[in-house]
Amino acid sequence: MDEEALHVWFCTSDTPFVQLIARALGAEFEVHPIEAFNLNGARRQTEWPDVVLLDLRLEGECPGRGEAAFQLMQEIQQFDSPPPMIAILDEDNREVTRRAVESGAYDTLASPPDMVELRMVLRRAQRFRQVERELLRLRSQQATPGLFGDFVISTEPMQRVFALAQRVAACDVSVLITGETGTGKDMLGRAIHQLSPRAAGPFVAFSCANLPETLIEDELFGHEKGAFTGAMGTRRGRFEAAHQGSLFLDEIGDLALGLQAKLLRVLQQRSLERLGSNTPINVNIRLLCATHRNLGEMVEQGEFRSDLFYRLNVVEIHIPPLRERRDEIAALAHHFLMRFAKQFGKSVRRFSPVALQALEEYSWPGNVRELENAVQRAVVMADGPAVELWHLPKAFCNGWEQQQEECSYDRELREFKRRLIVRVLRDCDGSKSEAARRLGIARGYLHRLINQLRIEEVAEESFADLPEICTPVM
Image (tube, rainbow, N blue to C red; front, side):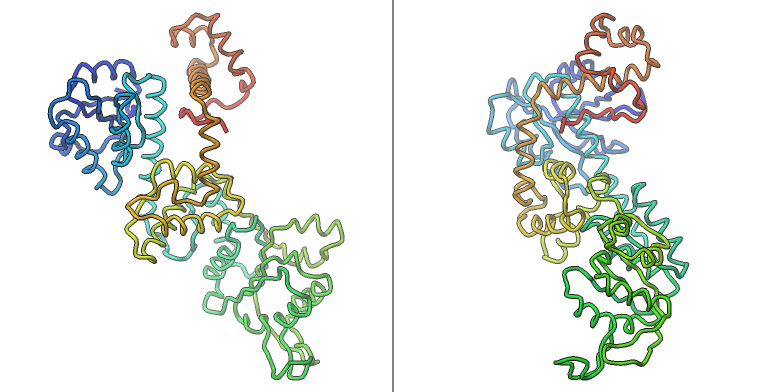
């Protein structure tokens, strides 16, 4: 048996049905029968399967078999990382379908199941299982708690970001952090400070966005008593407050040109003057800046000083948006789930498969900040052990329903055929004759499928990078 085969437990008392399904699925699926709908035999296994299939058909059932099946589902759900369960049942039995879903079934299929659909559902359930295991691994690592805040650094894009951040932190130079709103630029700035030799000093953060120029100047440089109407006493600015530490200026691209000149002077001279004073005050700070705007384009358009830009942009660290690192969404969502469940005293501990898939396929215009808010709302609304789709904000539910309408069975089947042919062509080094033989179809029919499915258009793609899981067409 191929070591990469998908491991399936089939819970049924119908042995011929198990044999039929196992033969139809093929060598890529290892089907192991579990009889009598109990865990007595299952507990003797060395490890849990990737997926559990449950036979909930009513034809010829023994008395009490249905209740035993639901009891088994409840027992499986008690484990920390239960394998996804797929129920096979009679097409018209809506009551059994409802109970199966309420008992935690990942999906349901009508009997007899279509083999193409069954393979797709099993592969999707396997992917969900892999995500659950990755979450457990990340939770057990507990590496440097709190240092990187709400970042997940298990994926390659964020590993590169933090490798650069760790390298830069030790050198006392200015850092420009770029990225869309909500990606966590402020948290990265704080992490750089904590990793730097200035970690024992203060970390002072200030946002330059949407504030009058006079207010920003007062906030940064402070003022003397009587400097302007209402100045009843002396006030230290953010630069002084950050002495011997780090000053983080968020949305530096919104800083007016007049203040840009004053900021440049402070950086060059390492001293400042409060409003209403001519006495220079020496400051020793490390400047960390962040912006969602393109400062290079602003320099070309005369909206940002070039000399200040080069002074700030000694090292630039770009945080990619959440939609470009979707592999982190599940881990981030689980991190927020555990935090808010503890904060609000809720028993919720996981996401349902549909809810997690909706999170992973959302566009996330607000990035990590929007994800955090969405999970917070879901934890508040949830009243059981799992976050369901309807616990998420309305935008997620509407988007999911629209996607489900667009993803018809025919489109799913077409995409499955396309990926199957691409994978076989990859294994055959592009030989169509050998691919047709392995698929058990005529070479001419294979040519027609290649043209119909537009496989020739992806001939230059790397076959090794194409996933074997059939996913909905967006």
